[in-house]
Amino acid sequence: MAGNTQMTRAARRGFWDNLIPLKGGLFGPQLAGWTPGLAARSGLGCRILADEMIEVAPAIALAADVYLPRQTGRYPAVVSFAAYSKELQAAGVPSGNNETGSPPVFTDRGYAHVIVARRGMGRSGGADSVYLNDTDVEDHAKVIQWAADQPWCDGQVLLFGTSYYGMTQPQVARLRPPALRGFFTNEMCTDFFRHIAMFGGAPQPDFFSLWMGANFTPLQFRLRVPPLLRAVLSHITNSPLKRLWWPQLQKRMTRVMKRFQRMTPAPETRKLFAALMLDGKTRATSSLPTGPSGALGDIEVPFVVVQNPGYLNLHQYGAYDLFENAGTAKDERWLIIGPASYDLPVYLWQLEALAFFDHLAYGADNGYAAQSRVRYWAEGANAFRRTSDWPVPDSIPLRLHLASAGGDSETHLLKEAPGQPDKTNSWAAVPLGAIVSNGFDEVENQVLTFERVIEEETELTGPVILSVSFSCNEIDSYLVARTALFPVDGKLKILSMGAMRPACRKVDEARSTRTEIAIDVDRPDPLVPGVPVTLRFSLTPQPVVLRKGDRLRLDLASRTDLLRSDVSHGHAQFDMQVPPYYSRNTLHYGPDTYIEFRRVP
Image 1: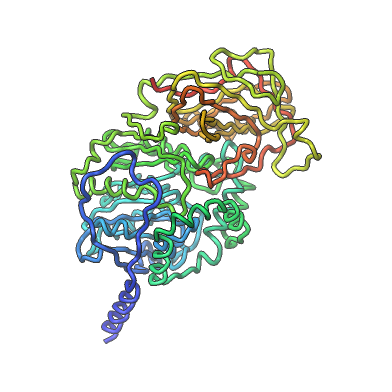
Image 2 (image 1 turned 135 degrees about the horizontal axis):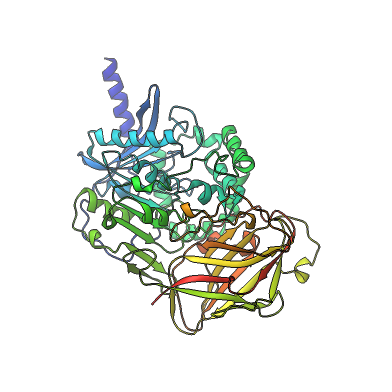
């Protein structure tokens, strides 16, 4: 009798949970310059099994929402695993943790979509702990096996997600769960220390305070949104009206982010923030796990990795590390470099992922196997290009030397020949938020600008390296570099960014890739005031086609906010608490001061 009562309650809950079907969402870039063949399945609808509990250890179970096609059957499962609350993932609410895609998009195409919250979050058991830890990775593998064993699954499991949901994928793929067929990861990192915690050798309090305030408040831990309410919200957020209200929200996104920063995270999250900012200055003392970089050769399954050039000091370089160093067969890995974009929730690339999954799980002859290993959006040409590898084979180094045009505040030059070794230009390095006198910027420039007028059409696609001879009248400072395009007929378009703490100028050869010069943060070497040193570091790649008459611009400064891009322009950029001191930074010209691109013939 008790069992029948429980079944009746479950049936009632299932009825109310599915009374209103979820509305799916597709928004932003979906396909990288092609049209797939027919979908393997379509028109299957969506239903939810809410709060399924997955046992991962004695007395510890993780809460999952399972979205299934309405038609009963056995389907491949798409698993999304992270530390975030699962309660709003399907609702389309523009929240900072909506990174799983839209479940009805997947179920309609014949996939089960499983969204899981890690230990300590929401209804999941166990204790909250440091992000991306080894226990989470092991739990993730158990979730994959659990999904494969369910009566609604055909035994095949795939992974999908962005940012946090993307970073967990290579971690668990290293364990080679038997049911895992492949993964599709977007905007991810492989070395959590250098790609997230210590950008250019300095901590990122702006990002961490925003991220923790948005995702790990006491409200997020206890949040409960009934599936019926999620469905109602999805019809509002994913209606055609989004094209009207989303641009208005995007214009106000900076203010929204500031409000997130003012929220108070849970106590354990605050302790982690303090540990990261105060103690996590080296790999040995950082509380974050190292990540899969250096062990990517353990991965064997097929994958697609997507890079968004719009996140200038987050989600960078991991895609290139994964594509270069994974153990997956060369003809079963794909890299997509998309246009710079900013989206909450992240609905990008769902159709691309489904075409990939159809190819893997259903054996669909939809053209995916024939896709080029690399597809990249070329800014300026506004089109996708195709190539067999990254960096682009047969691309040629193009080295442009920085040269003085006179006074510090002038617009200086980018030339083929080295600048005069006896020339220098300087800029003021002023800590973020520091006090300066009124009119300070009228007597001291805080940015050096260099430009080159393009004489013939040129495509620059590949790694970007800046090398400068640099001195300072302090023992340390900070250097930020940004490239931009000034089209003949348009406004400045930001291309790429990189940064470096001069005291951390040693190169970490073991962790470097063909796209990134990894710097060694663990062994600072203070500057000797006034003595030049050579700094070499990477900027984020942004493929671009320069037309005749366009201007290529390089800006140097010591603060990210001076070279800011607002999120309404498709970029997300976080301010750094740099430089550490008031100082005068000096650029010395000559053969060691240049920016190097890769030119495609």
